[in-house]
Length: 134
Image (tube, rainbow, N blue to C red; front, top):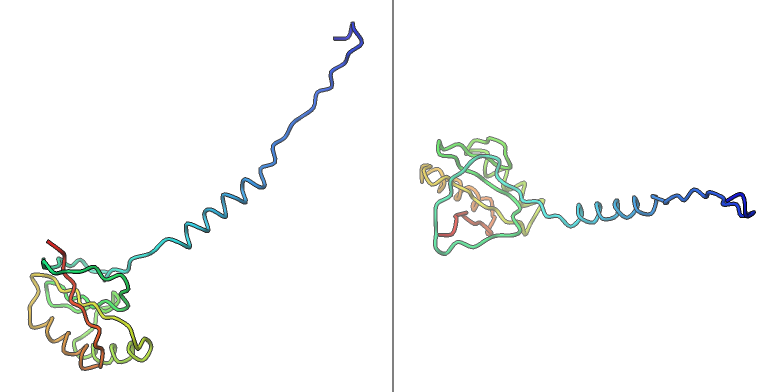
């Protein structure tokens, strides 16, 4: 309004995005730190069903036996003869660690028992056989 002697000055208003970006990164870090990751055996195993099955939260070492009788320890194919030495090494590193044997329901029963014997022969007493609840 030039006629009345009043002049308007245009001011650019800006929004500072720095604190908003900092907050987004803090939330991202929070969610990454609090997320729990589940370790699986790495091979597809159809677990047998058991009415007394319980969920194990703190699994330290997973041994999987496939339908064909192949043995996997932490996603690595191993021979039955190397199971005991692997478990002995594991026990030295984690004296209170758990071992979960995940055997396919169609696998040979003898292979699962051999794996269980080798794990116990290595001195590990916290051995669990995985199953799914009915």
